[in-house]
Each structure stands twice: as C-alpha cells, then as structure tokens.
Length: 265
Image (cartoon, rainbow, N blue to C red; front, side, top):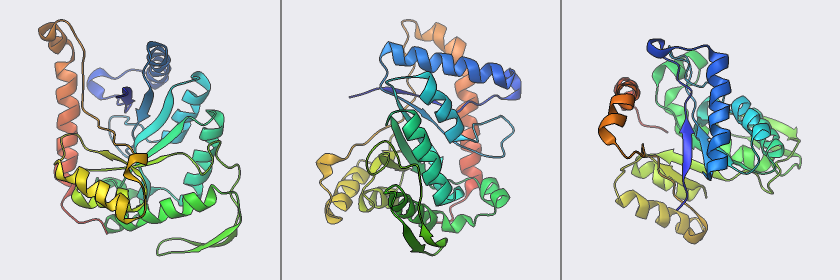
C-alpha cells in the first residue's frame, strides 16, 4: 500500500488569501510531503467556481515537476471531455519530460453543468469524448504521424512532439463510482480510480472488463481517495479542521445535487 496527498487549491472567501501566497505555500507543503516519504501528489480540476478551485492542472503539475525530484505527479481527476485531445497529449508529454517520467493522469467525465455550458461541450457526450481522447492521446504519444476520424474530432497526418518521457505515455487512470465507470476503465486498459466507498461489486466488474479486453488484471492498480487526518488528539484536531471539511463536503454535495442524472454516452 502506498500513500499520497491531494490538493484542489480552493480559496473560498471565508478564508481567502492572496493566490500567489497560497500557491507558493502549497508547493512548499508538497516538497515537504516528498521529503516525508509520500509516494504521490494529486491535483484536481474544476472551472467557473467562486472559490478559486484549480482550473489548470498542467501548469501546476509543471511547477511541481521542477520543484520535486521523486514524488509521482498526477491528476485526480482531470476533466477529460473538456480538453482537446491533441492539446491534452502535448501538455502531458511536456510535463512528463519535465518530471523525468513521474506523471500519471487520472481522468474523469465531469458532472457540473456550468462547466459544460460555459465551455460549450454537450454534457451528454462526456463518456464518448473521454474515450476518444484516450484513443487519440495514445496514438499521439507514439510520435508517429497519424490520422483520426472520430465522433468528436478529426484530423489528418498529425505528428505530436515532444513525446512523453515514459514509453507509451503516462499511465492512465479512470475515475467514477458506477458499474459503467468500472467497465469503461477495464475495457480501455486504464487503472481504476473510483470514488471512495463504492460498491464492492464494481471492483469485480473492473477486473472482468480488463480480462475481456485482453488485459492481465494483475498489471493494473486501484487507487482510493478517502479523507484521512492523522492526529493524537481527535477532539482538538476536529476543532481546527472541522469547519473546513464541512465546507468542502457541502460544496461537493451542492455540485452533485445540481449535476442531475443525465447518463454519460
């Protein structure tokens, strides 16, 4: 078992600080986490919020790449359907080179309607866009010319450089908390990054989908994202962090409630 840390860089008005200060201190804290032995750091993405939630995963990971030396760098998660696959492949390759091959990418379909509306992406297409982005990125990371004609993007005779430091590109993880998400991760040959406390049946669905797609399940990993706070005095610590955790969880509840139940294609 390995342990990592996760950041969303929220800066809500109740505790608002200068952004430059927040970013510098977060970089400092991640450098400390590396020295303390944490295996990975993950950052997540959201757009058009009123609290400064990190909107730009790759620039922040690039800053981490030059600030750290051993810790794995990742996204948990990057909102795949909101990205153009060529730009995604290029940005990922650059960060992977800067980090010496320490990049891993967790992808999610997204759910907040405001993000899809503002960025002009049909929310019902989030599943098919994510699958097509993975297909294009993997071909782009070969460094060889290729053409693509898909449901959402088409281009001819494209060559993408630089290629990633890691042969074949950074490891890909897919998030989600449903049986469909588990099946998609397995079918596409991705590691699985489910929501915490999902049904145990979904793990079996994932392993079965891997096998049916010709992959050896032993070659793939699962990562979970529970909130953990280590302390020798729970009451004192809850007095320090309780209000902040309630804020975070309540915002997510608001976003999920407003997300609706429209299936992902």
